[in-house]
Length: 193
Image 1 (cartoon, rainbow, N blue to C red):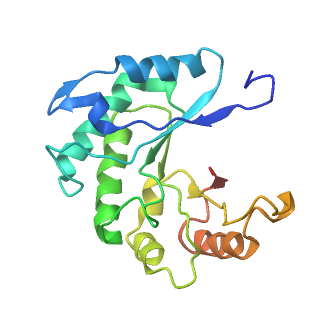
Image 2: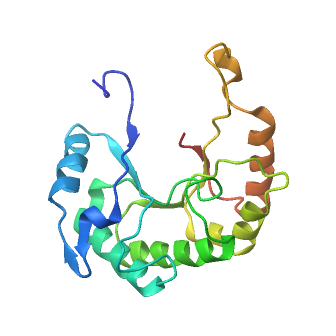
């Protein structure tokens, strides 16, 4: 049905603890079933997650690197893009931007070292640039050098009465375009939500 509608990409979230159930013990059965359901139909998958297992934390960069190298090797070309977290500048992560940036680089290097063809991206940004120190600091930490795209979630708050033409915050889009040009001129601008 997705292909008939012209949809060629989907985002399919997963949880790290569902894949690496204990340190060094991987089970890809459930995730492979989900990814295969799309790739068998010729649909590319962007695969973000927002959790780390209880036995590690976002500061353990070697665990993060190993996990991403392992999962990228295991799933190979069935994943079109690895998104490292989701809306880290919003309500889904409570660490400073430099901590997230270090995590992201470790995850990206793991995926890069697995030598897959998938794109690599930081989690979609969801807040306006103006007054957002998190996004500025994340960019100052050079995350664009580890990303194939500039990933934005451009949805804005709206009600059921909002006209379809107003679902995206135009000012937010423009300020993110300007930020992208400062830090990642070559990377394409993707709106993933």
